[in-house]
Amino acid sequence: MTQSILSIEKLSISIGGSRILREVSLDLSPNHVFCLMGRNGVGKTTTLKSVVGLYKPNSGRVVFEGNDISRMRPEQRAWAGIGYVPQGRGIFPHLTVAENLFVGAVAKKKKTKAALERVFSLFPIIKDFLSRKGGMLSGGQQQQLAIGRALLTEPKLLILDEPTEGIQPNIIDQIGEAIKLLRKESITILLVEQYLEFCKELADNFAILDRGSVVAQGSVTELTDEVVKLHLTV
Picture 1 (cartoon, rainbow, N blue to C red):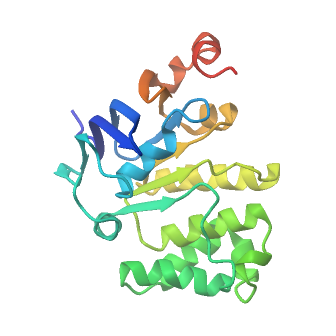
Picture 2: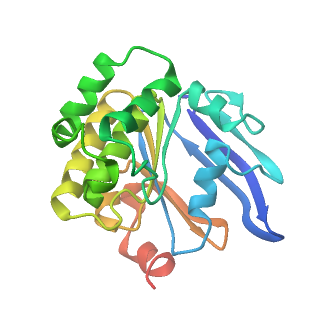
């Protein structure tokens, strides 16, 4: 049996006195795309932030490549191989595209030429805009930049929080194609996404959260219309 690259084990988190996650357990297989779904406000982003170290658990643990990382600092998790693209992209708007990319490269402390070429091959538009300020890019271009910056940390696990939010359809297609290529390159992807068809096309496995608990999970082939109607339809 293949060991999970990431295991979230009975994770509970409270923020400001409110319980956000209630014994959430998820397992991600290596080189797979895992889609975490649910209505707004059910704990999806909190789950991602717990993996990258922005929230500490009240109980439970996060295990990455067999090691308990629950108490690791965020930068230690990045060095261990976890890349993160937050909701809203989180680029530096007053820095140029090149400077934004350099931030990702510095985080890994490695030579970047080959990694940069890979980013440019996935998102050619980035190379054309290296001297442009990040804030001058369209939403879709900013998302490509944010993913490219995360890839320069050479992650084994890439976490994307709603990468299609507010983005034009042609760039959604480009991001989807990039995810397919990254999976072939042995990168595991944890994806929070509201766009159902995007998940169905790309994901190997899924889980659905409701009120901070996992209410459904399995192979994406089990993401039936009945499951969608029960847990996702507003």
